[in-house]
Length: 499
Image 1 (tube, rainbow, N blue to C red):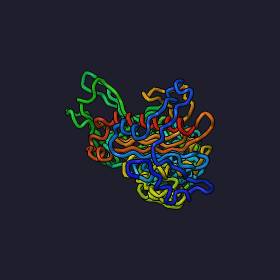
Image 2: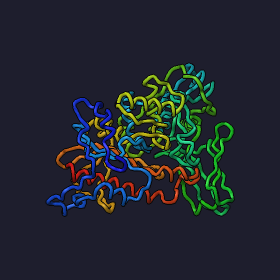
Image 3: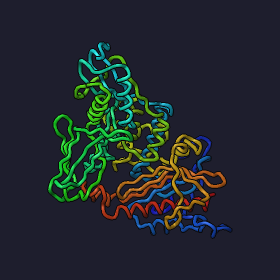
Image 4: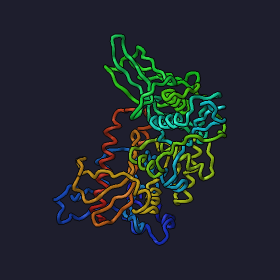
């Protein structure tokens, strides 16, 4: 039914995904809910408008697709464009989380090791020292400092050979989405050895001679300066930043003097995270009396004796943070590690994303799922609301995804938070320029749980943006606000009708 509520997807085989459940009796027209006796008590209790009115008032353009189903029975309650494949944005991270849970296990930890290729004699390793990563996306400067302290405690003062860094546990990607502006910190490189979410901190202060700039790998306790990222202030107004890959893996940046003001700071992406981690560890080791030469990359898997190990939090805690803060590098590292654990051994992000797409089709009975990455940062990924809800129902309201998803505040028609709301939302949000999505679970006061996915996108408007416009395009913020308001209105409507 063009433009209306549809159940075509579910009448052509979607019901087979659920043993003992049925996507039945999807409404073919928008339901106008009856007012409840206490409708005046809460904004969320007021009689909501029908679906067509809500979508029209949102003024989004493009397309809207959604599905809502009973989480326990799988019964389809309402749907529009259920089989329309749309960019999921960061909602893709919920797929990645489940993909990693099944491949790696909730208790999986990432190990970062220091490996010695020779014996210790006279305080020195008679050979090389190798800093070897396993893909930990949460490794930070504090963790490296702890490893340096352990090295000192072993009585090591240096090496007779080289200091090397190994990042081959995961394939290297220079960035997640090449279509993004160079300076965006949420689009860094990915490798088997990562540090500080592969970002370097740039700070500038105004002085009598112009601007003093600093580039460092700061953390809660440390602020080591780095040389592998350099910044020059130049006399221009635009562009604000330029980037060039320099010799030896150095990131060469310039910034427009006219954009700096009195002072400030921001995180910039790192393109050689292995050398970044190596330089920072070298500096921290020096503080503890361990002299190491300049780091160099090690191409093949290292052999030798592991003398220091740093273990990450469990995958469960890492995924919880990823779903809360929507960290792109975490999603890509988890997706790549999961693909390798499944024996796929991808050499690119795209190949690993293709493996996750195949997994979703075979294990979750998806029919319209095709991912270009694991984070949803790029706009080439596609998945339908119907496929997302099938996955959510399969997991169930007491499953792993619900447990790890963040609580999303319930809001009224004016966008105000309702602390007295009678339902709770646990979901993953997703936002790109002129793309907005929300998928997860909503639980009513009486305990009934609904699984839902809502995708909105004006892809023509997004495609019209130049690369330089993609950080803050005109109209994108207001558009996203209207989409989020529509998402809340739909959820409030479903609670009024079905709970």
